[in-house]
Length: 278
Image (cartoon, rainbow, N blue to C red):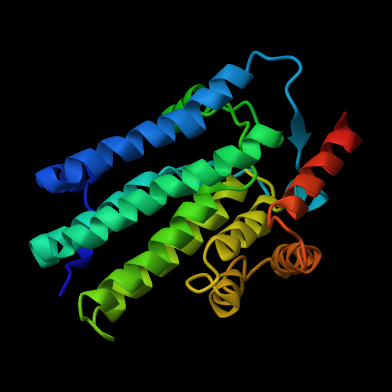
């Protein structure tokens, strides 16, 4: 059994657990370099460019969702979340889990590369309040220039973590064991996804684009049934928000029928938003 405490303990202990295996060092370093190169550097460089391609991707529904500072803790748990999930596997399965954790880290880095490829065509942003009264919000504003909203890496990474965690357990021969742990990880991924709207770091438009991105990258793991399972559990108290996510996701999918590049529908959306807000 994986102790549930391992899935929400202080992240520093999980970091130490990952770093305690020399076989992981090179892969962890690679992942950090990719995240820095593909997420932070492009945005900070673009921050001061006046002629950058920038799409304002807000939707009218965003204004109906209240800015709620109480969601910031779960929002900020997005990276610690996947770190704890992998450390928990190492804690329980020891060296047997190392190849799976390596594969996880390498694939995670790939998500940042994909997002960077879209940002090269057009950066994207949303309206967000200038709120600095809490330290965590100050850190968000300092370290996130807020220019890579589409596709939402928050959504991509937590969905990736939830489904990969299930897949990893199956690969370790767990079958239907660890039901509580699987449920906790999945529900936490849903919670982090919802948090991005309440802290005004993304638009409701960013979620279906992220889901479409994941489906396009691996339509076996992120198949139609898995994508539907995920969006059908989002915003249960806001059927209008959930309906938009479902409708926009299906629109992207339909528009991509016969397209040479699955990103064409995303580029078209960004171009439209540039024209409207240009």
